[in-house]
Length: 360
Image 1 (cartoon, rainbow, N blue to C red):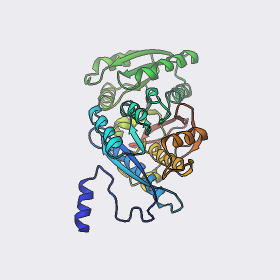
Image 2: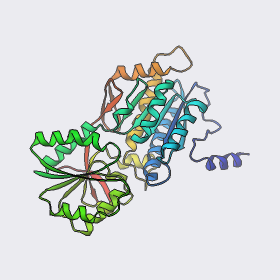
Image 3: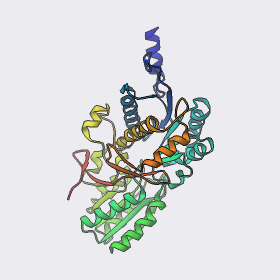
């Protein structure tokens, strides 16, 4: 029977499987539902983020002083809108979770109105302000403002006077680009804008134009697989300029392709934590934010006031917003009244196939 149970747990690898002694103290259970892209282009990132969240929940359940037991259910949303919608409905109506964690802006935009309607706490990972539409919705990732401030600091540190902005028409491109242009103008940095669409595969003409431009640097907002295709064309045409990415570089599975190129944006998970969380060989670029999110959720449930078995969503929301200041693996956070966690951006550079912190 035990062998059969183990086989079933392995077969249901996309869903957290309870162990016999998961909750030996029979504590009240806080149910958390999280979805990640566990297959497809973003599978490495999704699986690493999943493991980091599991580590946070395991740490919480190992603490015998905690009042609650935290049960995590994980689903593969494949970054497909229809699947994300189905998973969110499952979490709310079937699993009746207390908290949903949605990964990347696309998922956040789908889950946020559902969480608002049903009074379910939702933590999103992404840039999108649309997610912050009720007191039940929170977002923990680098903000567009922090991203753009880090970009200006980087360009100035490299003495860039003229930059080509290469932006894919996807995600939060326009939400990031408009304020960045204002900051470039204030900093006296000249710029040209180049746009391309999702699905494009031929960048010969664009890269030739970038090579011949008067810019000192390229600043790129692009995602897989187009970012790799574009970068290979840089190599093919021997583009010799400062090349930096607006936090898209960490999504690649081929870091060697980007050797010597920079990423401006999110915090890089330290090697010691990657080892601790079992992430060796995985792309753990964003994992620290998921670990911190798990810890923040646990802190809220352990400390929010409650007369029920577990605190209500309203009590959790009120507690989170009352604290404002947080700290974690990523560093210092400040939570604003909209539900956005603010943290500092970080510039990294690829060296020997690894992203490492950049210091001038």
